[in-house]
Image 1 (tube, rainbow, N blue to C red):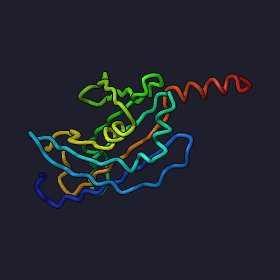
Image 2: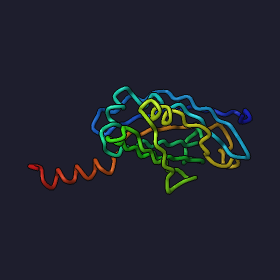
Image 3: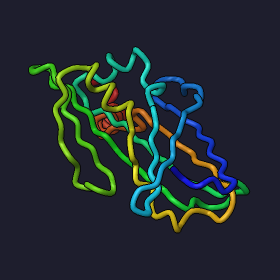
Length: 172
């Protein structure tokens, strides 16, 4: 684990959904660790996925879940370390499976998975383990804050396209 040198680790999760009222910010437990000189974070983001998420993700359109984690000096200032992961989810209405593409700094082109049902999808999305935030040497010299944000469907490509089509031809 990280050596205790007046480290303040606090986290906030903001779960947002397009077309629905913003969900209230919920506390999110963040566990920090170190391996091979790198700062790793583990989060449980399951509060971002309400029971209505199954219906939302099973709509046959591409859905997006974005997870962002940042380490900032406690006194303010720009982030010292940042991590981002974007997960594209497409429910296959014929096979009744979830096609998932995970994009982050390790695989910017994306890694594709097929998950058999919503239970497997929720478990996959909720457990964010060993997220590589960056080198330990880049940690701020004093206390710091860890902020985490989860965005559910910030704006999917299909939603943007449908919105553009509606604006161009509202009578259709």
